Image (cartoon, rainbow, N blue to C red; front, side):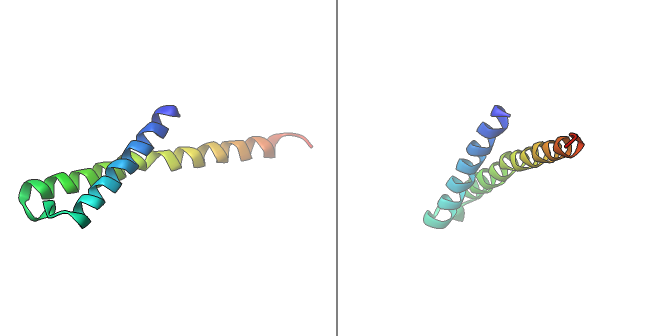
Length: 71
């Protein structure tokens, strides 16, 4: 879980860095800049995506355990 949390924050940082580079620099006007910006944005989004899914699965398992417990 800690690894996914670190990957989530690293991915968020990469995504924000890519978006800032795209919006506020002329880096995206040359081919190497396009590759860098798109890689930062794409890899950032891919690295962020598993964490919310794992949190949802953990929540669903807790709800299932609560449902199965006798009152």
